Length: 347
Image (tube, rainbow, N blue to C red):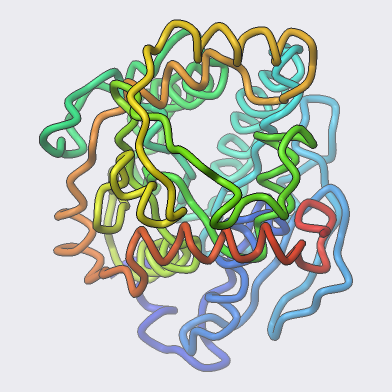
């Protein structure tokens, strides 16, 4: 039994000290909240560039920047039983060097600081986006190739970090490294943030409800998996508390496709050819009308469906929300201008 397991078994005031990097965003707020409620966790340290007024139990906030010229992270990690790395910069998609500095070089700084501080467990937020193009008619397990879709910066960066962790695990065999690969993550409080990141101001949120969405485009490949962020957080906590290693797919049922989306939005399906849709999105992105790049759109159409059996078996994990409920929660938050008292989730 390692130190993490001993602390977890003890529980109460002798529980774990967990550091969450990127603690104020969509996933971070749910992870911090779940950790703060867990009896086996004694304290949570939340690292973020801007500390919030939000104050969950057992949580201490620390202002820190993971960028290459940012703060020394080792002192914040010393004495921790686990580091959960969630920090990620989605924008600006027009400047991939900026996102590379934070997402790749910054993540490497987190990994190396955790090793230098002697942290026994590292849990990294990977993604379905790390997977190479795959099938839409069956689910793949964690052995599917993680080459990403190289044209999309998000996928390229996630895939690069998977390769880095391959070598990192060989260099640090005593550290328990876990890679979480969730599908699309939604919750009510993330609505404002995700709208800013992916849609911008082109589509007023008040229109994202029946009957203002007349049609859902029936595009080849528009089949994907979603998960409520709180359910993803439960898996992260389980990965901290249990002696597991390796990658875990995380997704809820049912699979979302144009038919299911048309039911949610009470809209009709319309079969449309892909090239003009892609051309319109590309033009809007180049004109800076929407922040999400057409390359990310291409990746979504190619992502495989994931089998989450390993998470169910080894983490004893089962999502409490369906994929439809997760998306509906997000749409409700979008219409209500929902958010949280953190800088990334501000309404």
